[in-house]
Image 1 (cartoon, one colour):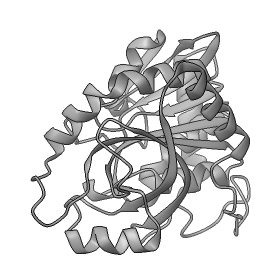
Image 2: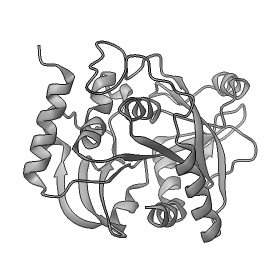
Image 3: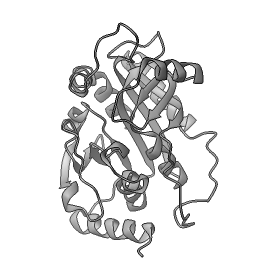
Length: 270
């Protein structure tokens, strides 16, 4: 049976063969946020279907390709969409490409997502810097055999989201005049959107936004020693009695509409 680390090394070899430069930063784009890729000067783009051991995204708003390019002098690898647990993937499948990008050269990971706003202060179109997270997906990307070549068995998660990076991102937002909230992201399994009772539970637990991604990726990247940052675009209010019906299409459209501030912020920070 092939070890996960061996699969990742094969992926790195494949990527190195396809692209001569190594990324310094990895960016994962969430639903409706693909417009950021247009700001990148492309070097090489590879469909997920061509990369060994990488599942193909089945979500309509996720392009499903890896874009390697330059942005403001930095070589970055952009995951144009991600795969999720709710698509039938195992936790290792969800984080495999991101782990590969870290071993390939990316020392900093920026996770983006579209999520429902729980905190009353958050409105559709707002950006929120993730300070902490709640993994309510029922699994961890660290479950199973731990290969010490990727990280320690019991990683400390006190500073999962890098505080120095968060300070720099807040500085960039202030310089650009972009309103940037700070808060806690809760990850649910999906694919169904949350019930009002679940949203109330998450509010009591301390969550400010809720989505169906990000938490496993953050765990895995931190496990490997990469710096982790996360930014949420609030696409809709989370479910409540008497509220509007939520659909993935409406979330993606709202995210795309509000993505310009996120693009400016990421470009300035990188």
